[in-house]
Length: 66
View 1 (cartoon, rainbow, N blue to C red):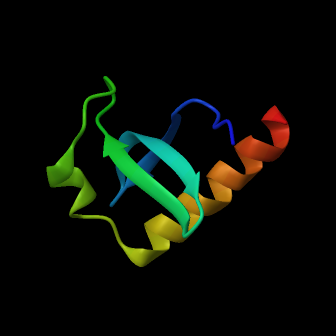
View 2: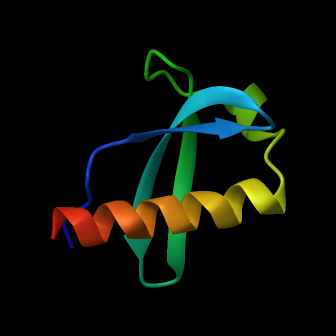
View 3: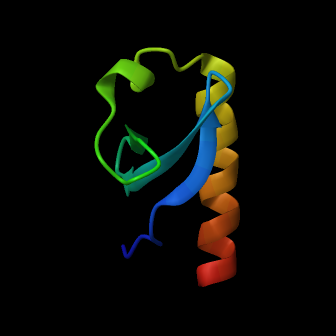
């Protein structure tokens, strides 16, 4: 399955990018800073609400892309 590019979002209210992938188990993600570098310090701040929102945003991008 082809994934759209990273998308802009927020994590704990902090602007970031989300790199995502649909896998057999479901949605997986990596939080990136605004320059596209992995930001594990920011990813640790993610709440379940953030993750649900990213899933919705990724699904909307997937539908738009394909």
